[in-house]
Length: 291
Ligand code: ADP
Image (cartoon, rainbow, N blue to C red; front, side, top):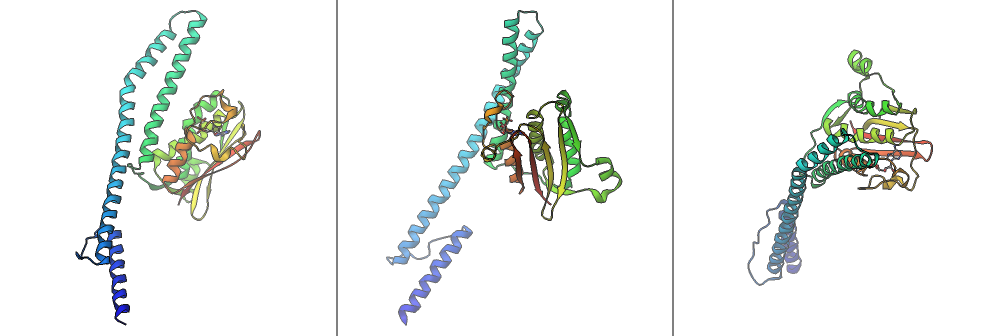
């Protein structure tokens, strides 16, 4: 009977130790030779080392972020100058071979610039130091911003972007048609534009891209449907990987981080992206955002 009472008390102390550890206020209370006291000492040592590794990890993440930001800042001016001089050279008269070399310099400088900007974005998203500023806002407005960003490139390829909504009518005259979701406007525009940009890039000229808005009970979102190259079923899980580029797209510009960033941004806000595609037929990307 006495043993039972003692054990019950020990369990109570152990339970309290765990509660205190979870709340971050664990302190040793007994200092003697008992097994419980030894356990408390070990428990304290474990918590201290766990806390130290957590702090070390956080510091390392901060350092990495700072390093990437520094690299980006330090390379900005030389890179801008390379591009500027290459563009000045382009205006000079020169033979075909030199012209080709200068064009290559311009292409690779631009690519390097995009790569550095993407690295900064990736590190900001991955380190989790930064916070999305989400508010409930119109999806028609969001889709329209994205479509406007893609208009120039689409026009160059004579691609028609068909919007299945009428922004003016939906939002300005009859507000009840407006569909809303919770999102960070600046980052979400960028995430969805990456998807529209791909749709334009991986479609043949004179085709159509359809942009529509949908609403379900818990999520609402935007769908971008193209009649382009299409993606095979095995490839779909890989396209969101960092620096992944499809084998059949190496003749197109790109560095393979667009979809990776899009997914980080959308999932970071509690949403998700769904892809349905068929090779040679086209792809449909649905971006779900919480309502
Ligand atoms: P990038 O376009 O720079 O290659 P992304 O991360 O944006 O990088 O896309 C990764 C890969 O997914 C692309 O290289 C391509 O193979 C495939 N992909 C993405 N969007 C489409 C699309 N709309 N149609 C066909 N393939 C696509």
